[in-house]
Length: 253
Image (cartoon, rainbow, N blue to C red; front, side, top):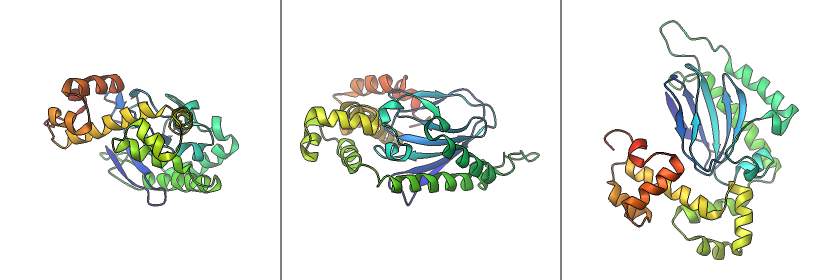
């Protein structure tokens, strides 16, 4: 009950929608991103960058629509440094005040009927389209407007995240962007919520899990992603995700 897609006007951003089946907590892995969220139960929220996995608990039938902003972009949209939101889920009106109430009204109008048809899926489910798509469009329009008003994201964010995602060391990344180690750490906390070393480890974990999910054996994944060995990979994933990679990967991966 989950789908996602790219957002053309915000490079690297992803729109997503889901409907909870109420089968327990969903493990959301850290990724260096900030999300603008709408829940049919909780309303508008901001999800800060997580340092470890967030266990999201929803009621059966709860609908979610989200806009996931790429690393370094969220602060320009939300107007606060990323480290102030680290490991938090914050009501949007705590950040935007009256502007959040106006957005909530627009989202409510887009949501339309939330009734569940007899024998069918909830309106707005990722399988049904309709309201979920309309809500996502509202979130994207507001985020894009605020991003433009801020003069766009800090270009340093995309450069640093791209280099670290490609496996560059923190020292090499700092040299390439023309910053000293302390300055890069300070800017990274503002842009990503944590220092460049932590971001690099999180991005490496995501890359490793993508490889493993595509069917690459874990021992080979460890080598390709730059871990010392499979045991190192397992320790890193367990630290960030709370469980070993075999608990995260789909059956048969």
